[in-house]
Length: 95
Image 1 (tube, helix red, strand yellow):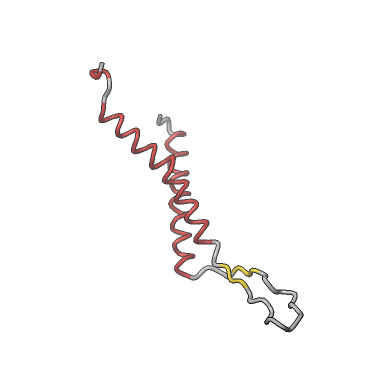
Image 2 (spheres, rainbow, N blue to C red):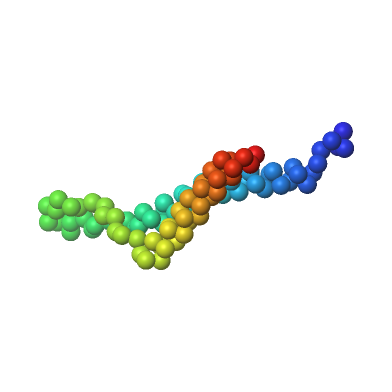
C-alpha cells in the first residue's frame, strides 16, 4: 500500500500548505500589530484630592516608531506580493 504514496510530493504539499495557510496570515497579523503602535495609560488622580480628571484612566495610542513602521510595511508588502503572485499564477493557467 505504501507504493502508492509519493512521500516527497506529500512533504512538498505539507510545507506549501503550512507556508500559505499559516505563514501568510501570521505575517499579515504581525504587520498589523507592528502598525498599531503602542498604548499608554494616563495616571489616575492623586489620592486624597477627591477629584478625578476627565482623562483619568484614558488610553492613548501613539504612532508607531519608524522601525515598527518599516517592519509593518515589509510584512504587508510580502503579503500583497504573495496574493498578487497567486492571482497571476491562477490566471495564467497554473493549477
